[in-house]
Each structure stands twice: as structure tokens, then as C-alpha cells.
Amino acid sequence: MPNVAFLGLGAIGAPMARHLAAPEFTLAVWNRTAAKAAAFAAQHEKEKVRAASTPADAARGADVVVTCLPTSHEVEALLDGPDGLLAGMATGAALVDCTSGDPATSRRIAERLAERGIGFLDAPVSGGVAGAEIGTLTVMVGGDAALLERVRPVIEAFGEKIVHCGPAGAGHALKAVNQALLAVHIWSLGEGMVALARAGVSPAVALEVINASSGRSNSSMNLFPQRVLSRAFPRTFRLALLDKDIGIAARALRELKVPSPLIQLTAELIAAAHRELGEEADHVEAVKVIERQAGAEIR
Ligand code: NDP
Image 1 (tube, protein in one colour):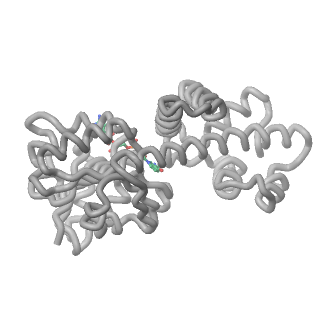
Image 2 (spheres, helix red, strand yellow; image 1 turned 135 degrees about the horizontal axis):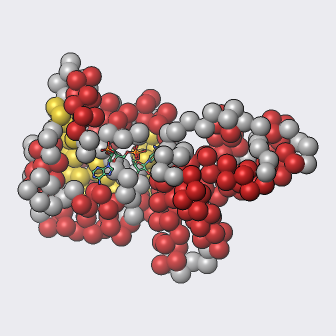
């Protein structure tokens, strides 16, 4: 029965952790806002989930520590000090970082942990809060393939498609590119749909045709019908996080010297939308910026 620690009970972290509150695991949770960890443990009293007081306390005795924080910066900051993860993690344990982080920081974390005989996998997820709730996330993993096999039962609790992508940082690189594509699709579809609304085409008709044609995407098939046309704009994945993600992709592409005008421009547009709409806006609300600029709504 693996001892697992889960750190970061945010919008996606909490539903992921819920799958680990199960008879197959012994689970400790930690969250910066301690009340969330206490509430989580209280909800899972039957499964004997323990709310830890510090990262070190959560990691003590854990075979696998899972982190799901906003950026790699927060993960790295959790390592050190008397309350840090390294004060609690034992040789032979593994850190599985489900944050959508950045490859360079992940490689640095992997090297530091390796010095202490601790394994590291970058293991960002996709599939959204809905996928986390039903345990069908896609998990893209960077790091040692043998270590992935060892910790697979833990990842399988919340992941359905688990893919080894390459060495440390590879999962985070792939996730960043995926997120850049998401941003490009949302933004370009937003522009196109506003233009079609202006041209007198009903948005429902526009999506019906696009979704039966080659321009379709997850944005046209799911996000726009469920969130934009309905004007529901539920807050499941913050625009601030998409800004962070496409920023990671844009920087990686520049460092790799890949000409990337489209992704660089979209990163700037998403950053400006983030500044305009604030920290709590959902990623799909970026469309509102296009609507405001055009003076027309997609409805
Ligand atoms: P949220 O903003 O909802 O939650 C962030 C979590 O990180 C909270 O538990 C928060 O604690 C904690 N946190 C924030 N800052 C710090 C800090 N300085 N030190 C310690 N803990 C901190 O984010 P999500 O759960 O939505 O996202 C988490 C990661 O998963 C991100 O990298 C995101 O890009 C990725 N992701 C999210 C998806 C989604 O649909 N939401 C989908 C796929 C990936 P507190 O409660 O105290 O604020």
C-alpha cells in the first residue's frame, strides 16, 4: 500500500487527490491555505486521509509525493528549509510533479533530487477539471521510464492515458506546446466567430459547419458551444495559467531558435488579456477582449 503525499489542492489538484483517497493508498495532503487541506481530510475521514502541517510533514514516510502548483517556481520553492519537501523525503522516494511547469526548472529539480537518491518525474496533465473528477486525465511524463513504471499505480488513480515523453522536462515541454495550440485555437476562433456574427451568420450555424469541416478543434467542438454561446464562462482553468503556459512555450521556442511568429504573437495577446481581465478570469474569457475590441458578441 504506497504512502502518497499530495501537495496543492487547487481547481485541478483537489479532484486529482480525491482519487488517491482510496483503500489502495495511504494519503497525506498539504495545501498553502491550510483550511483547504483540513476540509479535504474531514471529507475523507473514512479513508483516513491526513492533513499535513508542512510540506516536510506531508512527505515524511511517503513513497511518492505528488505536486500540483501553479508553476515550477512554486514547486522549487517548496523544496528547501526545515519545513521543505527535502526535509521529509527519504532516499528512494519519488516526486511526481503534475504542475504545468517549465522544462529548465524541472531538469534542475531532477538533478538536485538525484543527488539525494530521490527520483523525479515531470507529469503534467490535460483533460481539465472534468477529466480530473472522473479520473481520465492524460498524463505526459518526462524522466526515467523505469521510475514511471514504479509509480504508475499512483498516476493511474487519476490518469487514463499515461505517456512517457522523454527525459526530465519532456513532459513539461510537450504540455507547453499543447497549451500554446489551445491559446491559438481559442484566439483565432474568437476572431473568426466575431467576424461571422458581424457578417450575419448565427454562431450556432457557424459552429455546426466548422465542426463538420477541417477548421474544427476542441475549442470549436466543446469550449465555444458550452462556454461562449451559452455565455456561461465557467471558471475552471484560469487565464493567468494559460498565460504562464504559452509563455513557457514561447520562451522554449525562442531558446530552441525556432521561428515562431504565431505563437509569440498569441503569447502577447494572451498576456494582454490576462492583464485586462485579472487573476480570476477563466481562459475562455479571453474571447471577451476580442468581443470588446470589435464591439460585437458571439451569441
Ligand atoms: P489553482 O490556481 O486553482 O490552484 C493552485 C494551487 O497551488 C492551490 O492549491 C494554491 O494554494 C497552491 N499555491 C499557489 N501558490 C502557492 C505557493 N506559493 N506555495 C504553495 N502553494 C501554492 O490552479 P489549478 O489547480 O487550476 O492548476 C494547478 C496546475 O495544474 C497549474 O500548473 C495548471 O496550469 C495545471 N492545470 C490546470 C488545469 C485546470 O483545468 N485547472 C488543467 C491542466 C493543468 P492556495 O489554496 O493556498 O491558493
